Image (cartoon, rainbow, N blue to C red; front, side, top):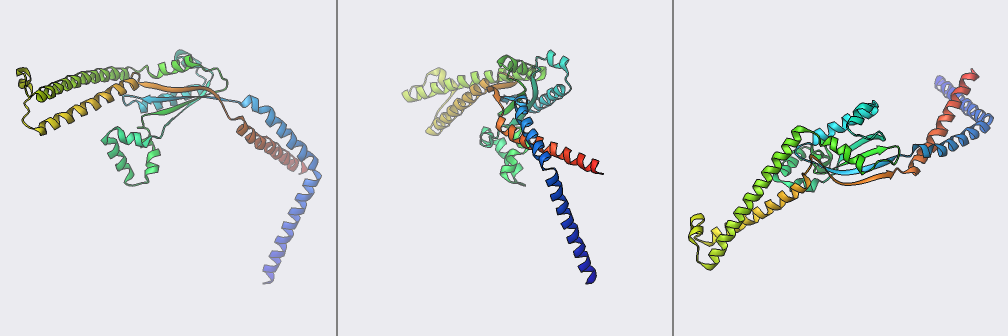
Length: 299
């Protein structure tokens, strides 16, 4: 019991001594603390113009299964920028004013599900063991989204459309994916033509059926014996029309391996948030250095 009271007294003495020492230190160095804080604030305001950065954003659509290729290429370019590999950057037309390139998928889970049934089944499989919201932002799912956002950071507002195009010329210069692109375009156009021919034949059948007078040529192609077959043909025609619409839409988005959809160039960063950060950083750093030096020289 006596030992416990003694320890409590010693602790109280230590706390009281520490508080008094701190008060004495602050009173003795109050002028320096205020002066250093003011210097830190001034430096923060002076530093903001030199820390201003610009962001250029491009909405893109990676085609022909090129998502992993795109992310790997962005990682490679960033490593070359960090290494200041001017030979690589100049050879591939990448502007030296670019400080970093970021990429992220645009969360469009509903569009992803609506694209085809396999995507819906894939999402169901991933969601069995987890929350659907977590699954939607998981890398396995999000990398399969149709659109992604590329953010190009630069120290100056010097980037123009020509610079962006040169970057995408580099990204689209891949023999494997270009061969795949040409083959896919050819197959889609062949399918579009075949669909149109089939739709034309179905129209002929409906035309002759309405007149109840099938021509001999059409009889050789299709024989309709009841309304069920007409309904089936109508559904087939509708499916073919929808397929053609998808082919045409897909061709618009698939002219390049990495297709640009929209872009905004040289958007100035939020200088107000930068200022708030520097108003904390510089005074705190200077005060920490001051306290450390006073402690060292006091000894």
